[in-house]
Image (tube, rainbow, N blue to C red):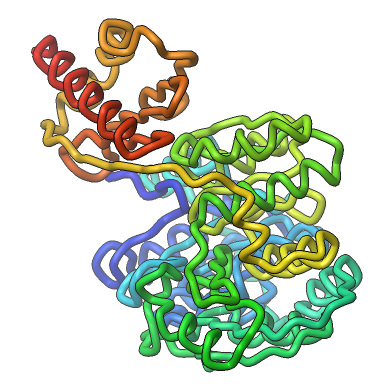
Length: 453
């Protein structure tokens, strides 16, 4: 059986990769593995969500699990409620920022952290071996509708108090945040103008991925209405993107670094977790405040594990996925936007001013074709040969591929998980420096590939 779980749960094309039959099997496997008496289930707005939810719930019920169906809800809200209301597990039907023809299933532990790789492997083994623990007809579980989102709303309202009432343009992209996000931000005293706030499983208004290209209308609206900030979420609400008061899309890396610096300053130091692809501006902003940056593999589950293990104060990936461990261990777009407003209020700064303090570096990316059966061996060989090409490296990391830290930049070389290519990511203090590092990186890949038979 091909591997089901990726870095963000099970995900695939609806009725091709992800069918109601598979959803029911995953439900049976979760019930078998978790032995949970109570499981929370929610979904985003995708048109296939109801079908897959019904199938998943049937599988859970057949294992004797009682289900609280929370309907359409952002992923982080489900994770938060799973923890706060002591459910045995939480299951979210979502494909996050992927196009509408995709859907997925993400499973959370009772502590709000997504299932780790070990738990995912057990689920897959149960499905492959069909070792489902089904109960007798008298013990089949019960399902009830439930709406406990007010607990999440109150938690944010209690944590964030603003002196200045900003005008926000909030683009929920017709996704799972369409109801809660405008409501929560308005409850903080902000004037909220909502865009695309009606649920639409086809995401007709814009792509569910909030990037510069998909947020051009939001940027224009911020300028035309003279708003203080534009805020946008992905399909399930675990990511957030910002448009500054000048209508400019805020770079994900620099926004992450600026907020991480604020948290570190407020906490008088501490560990900040990010992934191997994030900009070195995170270190440059965090370390002057006594903080330390820890880098993990790409994927929010790896950040959550490191945050929990290291008792970190904050974590985030440069895609708008931020984790605030004092609340829960799932990336949370709505919470992140509220806490950013709190940072602006306490620092008494406009958003563009806050971001301007973060240095901007040049990033280059290149893919080099390499056969699937050879790409991992080539990356392994690169780890052995790097000193020949980069004798001046200051640090080597093998957390995810090979990442070399240099005096004026860094290079990351990874085997693609989906394509026959090796991916190179380079960052330098200048474009000239970045190009020079990339040239050496290409040379290193070519030399290492020549030594792999």
